[in-house]
Length: 265
Image (cartoon, rainbow, N blue to C red; front, side):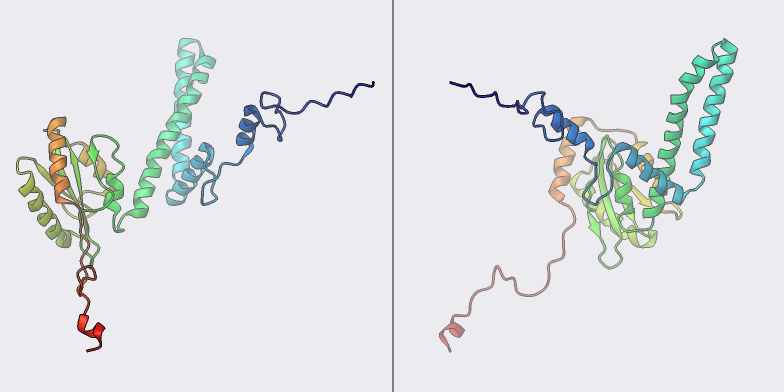
C-alpha cells in the first residue's frame, strides 16, 4: 500500500510567521511597525511627525526660530571644540557636544512654540483656562470656569493649591472685576481662613500676560498642608461650578394634566 506524501508545513502561531500573512506575534509586531501612525484627523502621530508640525507652526508665527536654533547649535559646538583643544581631546568633546547642541535647539524650539501657541489663543474666550491647565503639579484647575457672563463671554477660573485659592479673570478689567469680586465673596464665606489670590489675565494695567500666568501662580508660597488642602477641596466642591440659567416658562416635570380638557368640558 503506497504511503501518502507529507503535507507541506503551514505557518504556525509561533515564530514561523515571518511574512505579512503570518499569524505569530513577531508577524503582528512587524505589521504594526509598517502600519502608518495617523490620528483620527488623518495627521501623522509619530514623534518625528509631531516635532515637524510644532516646528512648522512655530516658524509661521516666529520665523526667527530657525536662526535661534542654528545659533545655539553653533555656540555649543564651538564651545565643545574650544574645551576639546584646551584639554587635548577635540574629537571626544565634539562627539559629546553634538547631543548637547541638539538638546539646546529643542529647548529653544519648545520655548518659541509655547509663545506662539499663547499668541494664537490670546484674546479669545477661555484663553486663561488653557494657560492655567498647563500647570502639571501642585494645582487643580477645572476645565470649566466657575462664573461666565453670557453677554460678554467674560469668565472666572478657580484653582486650588497649597498656596490657597486662586481666582483668574479672563476679560477686560472693568467688566470681569465684578465677576471676580462676587466669586471672591462666595469663596470667603465657605473657607474664610484660606487666602484667596485674585488675578486678571491680559495685557492691560495690573494684569498678568498669558505666557506668564502659569509661572505667576506657581510662585505663590504654600501655606497649607495636604490634609488641610483636602478639606478645603471638599468645601469648595459643595459650592459647585457654573450654573446654567433656567429657561422661563412651565416646568414640564411639574406640569399637571388638565382633567377637564381631557373629558371634553
